[in-house]
Image (cartoon, rainbow, N blue to C red; front, top):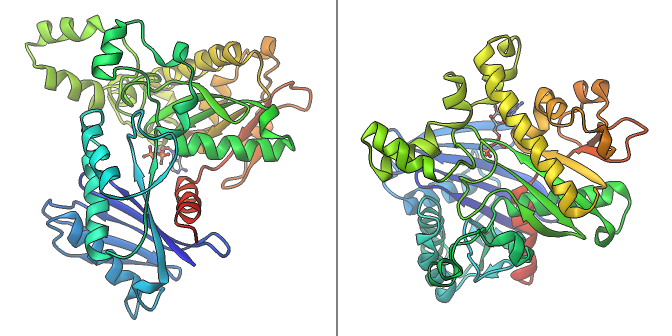
Length: 399
Ligand code: ADP
């Protein structure tokens, strides 16, 4: 049985077709520049990469191209649409409406629409992906898997800001948290690796990628996380500032004469590693080879790693101890320097990184990079958000 996983952005659409018999990816790909000139589909199947350059004026056309590629004589992997049992969609914001995944119907679509005001950059694109699939595959069950759902277990003391309670009640201003599927997946993998019942574990999961967040997971449940009302909060990221003093926004606008929209664009797109280094938002450009010899690159990455370390300390307090720290996603899985800096001088907390294991960490598999005498295990675990979405979809579609 095959499940199609869709992650739709405003101008892009990523997909994977997963054979649930052995949870293997039989095809995957990316539609780029949807509704922009020069759109193309890059489709990977049968060990080959196929590129189709064709106009994609909207998401429906993009989905049709994906389905055509999946059944194509040359690059296809299935005979027809009946071989796709269900479709799982990533939806960024479920607000307080959804604490778990859900089968999609008109009511669910409507609440995703209402929640677009909380995630204007993401939910509208996710909805476009869902509607496009519904149009092309009207009889196939669809499931929404929310980035926010895993964090629904956070207690009030963690999710409320020190603002007026009316702001929460009237405008739904609170911490929601994101990357939930990833934090859930790697915390479960960590418990398995430790040979422990997840109910008895305290784990800090560091999802460090282009966007980054850290979560305190107690007994398999999220109890605090660094992203907030939006994914702009918490750690500095590839191009996002992370948490700043909120009064800076007004001051910056006065100094530059720019608008609120300019300020939000600046904080989302021009800050973080890009703004600090003046060079790149990509950690490979900042860390690989001798890139760290450039003082601005090193300063940017050190600021990032220091913020990771601060949250590790903070969440160790929140959890009253920690069994394992997990590093995952592009940077967490691949950037030794960040892991080494983030775990440095934490031996007081029983956290000791083995430099040799860290520097020779195998790619694509779980590794323990703590010293033998470290009280806390330090794990590198590849994340797999698509697999989580496929599993949730299979369960909800009753397949
Ligand atoms: P996102 O899904 O948020 O776009 P990723 O989890 O793919 O992000 O992480 C992207 C980041 O990971 C980039 O900054 C990239 O430089 C960094 N990275 C470092 N090494 C690698 C690598 N070997 N492969 C992929 N990404 C890497």
